[in-house]
Length: 216
Ligand code: GAR
Image 1 (tube, rainbow, N blue to C red):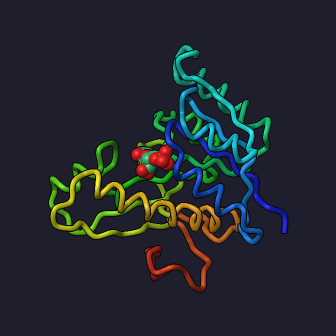
Image 2 (image 1 turned 180 degrees about the vertical axis):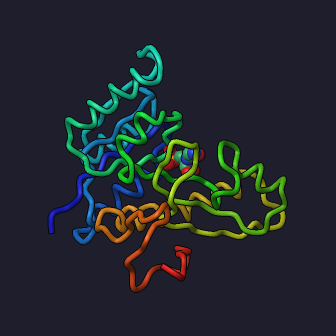
């Protein structure tokens, strides 16, 4: 079966992008990464993508006058590679409705919390401050509101005694690296479709860490 072309947007380290790259090596994975793009020329993930033979692009937001001009450039760059789906993987620019609506139901994000809890930054510090016992990560379709949109999958991790933001972040990141490829595979194979602002899943079985709505 033909693979779905995806673009991955990063701003930094790119470990989630790397998890997608690893997953895409499997012939059964339904997606191929056609381009990795960054808004930061110094993003370490760019070198990782290049070493893996993936096309890379830099669209430096500082070169543009305003968010829309930046997003128009980003959009035209992406279009050159013909992706059907765009995956945000640690992409740290807020996107305007112009961009998110253009890619509605085709734009996916991973966020380091169990949404709708802890939107925004410093999620691990805030989870510890709140005293939650369970934390985790979420993969969702992007909507104009920040860290909002129909949820494809979530992975939960325990908060352990003595955790610091760093130890908790590392435990969540490990879960992210498993969750993101699974969710991207579901989206690319048409098994995670948006219906009425919820994601309807067509799966018979899934990993225990991938918390799905049992009513779907
Ligand atoms: C990841 O933890 C990702 O969930 C988070 O940034 C990190 C990027 O790491 N994204 C957000 O906070 C978006 N709101 P990576 O560059 O190694 O994938």
